[in-house]
Image (cartoon, rainbow, N blue to C red; front, side):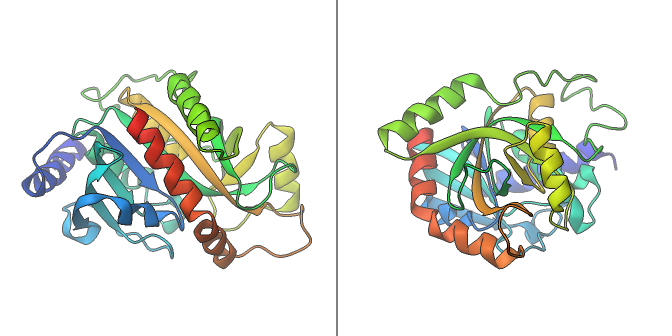
Length: 272
């Protein structure tokens, strides 16, 4: 069975649970899954029930799709994502994205927990992703192109949609939420970056570092889906503060900014 056949089987399963139109998809990063509780008339579909889906193995990732209303729009949310460091090949990491985009999604919102590289950031800041740097040497489009979904060569000049960025900035201003802006750099993980790698990231123009998101954005742009990205700065990257890094801090900080993050995302969606 080829890749697209597997995607179709997953799509058919989800459409048995929900047959309406969907406007927006959201990927909820580490510790940010609480937004799923705000979705109205929610239909919850555990990943383990969906044919072909991998299983999320990381703390802070619940592992289910949620379909319902948020900000007055019909949305589908991934409450937990998949990472290359979990041992999945990239075509599996992005498989759920391929599936949800096949449901007719035109806009994808990606969120993540990230380490702050810009020394003006503090844990708890929200950062609008203006662009990204793929530092891994990996790309989910390597291999035979899926011509039915997108072109062989994908323009990434505007990986993150400029109109959506303007909307996010205006919405944050209206809500009196400080929204930083910057460039996200993808490392594979699962080790946190070394202080030297963080200095390199800063030299190359990165504002934050993390272990996800970029493969999802590449696949969305392959399918000509608009993307908005927001990082929660959950810790300062290695070497900036004189203390070790740990995942518990990531989760704790995500929970600390939970209300601010959820309010911003919901209001952005309502204005789309």
